[in-house]
Image 1: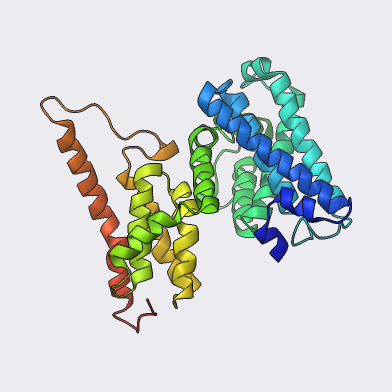
Image 2: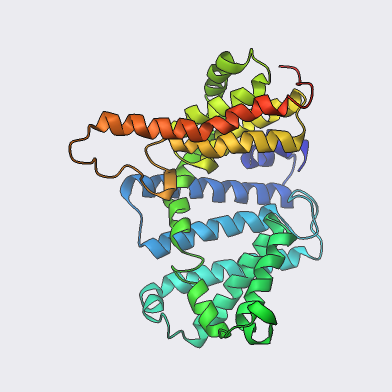
Length: 342
């Protein structure tokens, strides 16, 4: 991705172009998709979501559109000139839209056909699974793609595998029927992403762009910045502060991790050390919230005779004990070598 794209959004990129071109048109389209996506999720968060499976379908469609455009085949960035493989990208985009339209247009009957799928259900489901696998290859990498592909083949042809891998196979029709349903691709994690975590991600983006997220970093740096390995302690403390609000590891990484991890790298940490130190604290930071973001609420009924304050004290004490290793690791890291500056 070029420096221009890193400093400006899609809309600004299109406006800065001197003439109408493929890049400016695509930038405007991506800007429109992104804005529509944000507005849709804000409206549904305030007014309520549509039917759960339809809401999940639309969320996955938005992600697929952005993934196919922002991770093109045989090109490093969407800004680069089109190549022959771009035809394949556009075909994938059309197929993704067609699959979602097919399911939403016949939503009730499609759900009633569970365990008795029609031929069209199997065809569109097979296409959808292929598209999800292709996005996995583009975004996550070939390792995850190969793992998923291996176990998919194993499920279909398990009777041909040796040793402990040998078992009864499952027909492809049955696999598609389960995967393309609310028990597979559109299961509860997608519902959590579409209803809760996406809002925390938006909040984190607003904090990052407005500079408000720096407030958490400044407080944490004031507490731990003057000690040895100050940037690492800043990461651990700020993750706890922001985690108490968001309750989500993902939004914690997006909001505070984008500051603390580069800060550690700039003061001498390697990329691996910064990622491991920051990741441990960012993941445990969510424990300070009464809820775990999209993962469900952790505050159950208060036991009879117990004060709610006592339950909260126990909750935060446990969270602090679990969060301590991320903080103490910063000391242990420097017992074996000289600390970076800061």
